[in-house]
Length: 415
Image (tube, rainbow, N blue to C red; front, side):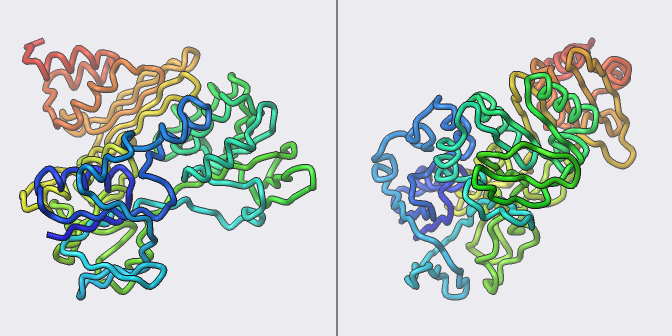
């Protein structure tokens, strides 16, 4: 079999390795469109603060890893896919045939319609090349403006602070990480960052950027900021599906796949940030742009491509964030759903928060701030869809007793 994988992130690499494990003789081609070995975007903040070198970001550390597995790594940009002819068309006009195809093309940063985003000194933090430029400009004492305080922005935030810059964060929503936290948790994180010397402006938009000759003037819809030496754009991401136009592959916000990670077109699969796959918490098809889901997708898609019928039960939405020493998290349906019940424990002074969401006697979602000991337990109870019985009412009254409930229900106690 001739396997081709477009995309050399975690989903693509794990898929290639899984294919080789289950098919010793098949041809495997892994395609990446950056001039780098396959690397992890999640490692870029560690590169920014010099904890690791560029090589430390690579997904596999031995130079001959892919050669040893007889995986051909090709650096090229795919322009289009002809599913009838089972052919890829590259940017230089060359073509490549496939027998089975995995789309693991990931996502790209959103660039809001703001004048001046193309100026020197304005960068996203998505590629290794982006990180090189930010590393050069984010010098100690420099004023840096971070546009966006979502999950990616908050990861970059910590790296920038550790580099010793003077940091201003501008978020258009009313709290930090609005797609991961409610107003209590998001504003708790905001206050924590402010206590660490970070200027955080929520409910604020950047309206334009201009070059003053001494730096970047950052125009806001309200308020003012000092001239910046660097602006980092972290305004969200979108799946890379544009090249599939005319292919017959069905897309929505991502490539629509079934519970075998296969698209509507036979022999074409998708994994990672480009796959609109089953969300375990809702049963609906969503794009979950998180590395654990990408790795899971890559492994399961490859198994199905290799002929091992393997069902994807669904991936659990989960985010765990370490922001200047404060751990926050969210799992499943953290904002609740129709008919769900909510229990909260709030200690704003000590930056501690726990919110639990129940549907019937099952835990379906949770979020926490400053309570990292319970993360595995929250995930386990949600993912296992465990019936809590009388423990549900106990947790409604005292959410902090989650560890007792976990031990009782997952380890057979009658407590």
